[in-house]
Length: 147
Image (tube, rainbow, N blue to C red; front, side):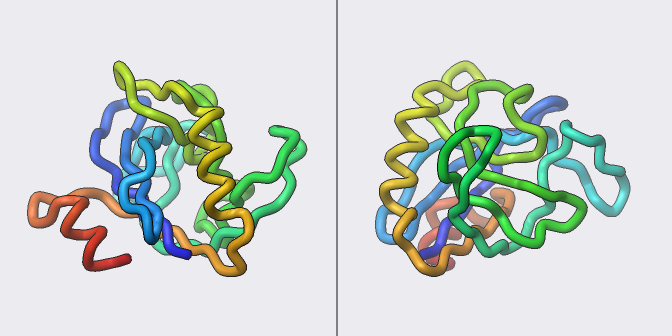
C-alpha cells in the first residue's frame, strides 16, 4: 500500500499537508514541525520536519502512545518517526500528526488515526512518499501520477 503526504502550508513552527491513501485518495490533513532547506539549514531537535523522500512503514507498538502505530524506517537524521495523534506542533518531535485541519491545527486526530490504522494495519508492505506541492503540479495531479 502506498501513502502520499503532500506538504502545502509552511510556517515558522509548523507544516500542514494532506495525506492520500492508495485506493481511497485524500484521507486527512497532517501537521509536522517546521520544514527546512536541508542544504542550507540544520536540524533543530524536536522542531524540524523529516526530509522529503520515500520511506518504508512498519506497524509496531509504541510505548509512548500505548498502541500500534506506523513507524517510518530509515529516515535520515531521525530515529523513531511515527504517524500518530496530536493537534499542535508541540505534540510532534518530528513525527507526522493526522487529523482534520482547523485554524492551522488539527482536530478529530484520534478518530482519524483509528480509521487510518483500520485501513493499513493488515498491509504487508506500506510505503509513504513525503513531498511538497509545487507550482507546477497540484496534489491531485501528483497523486494520480504516483499512486
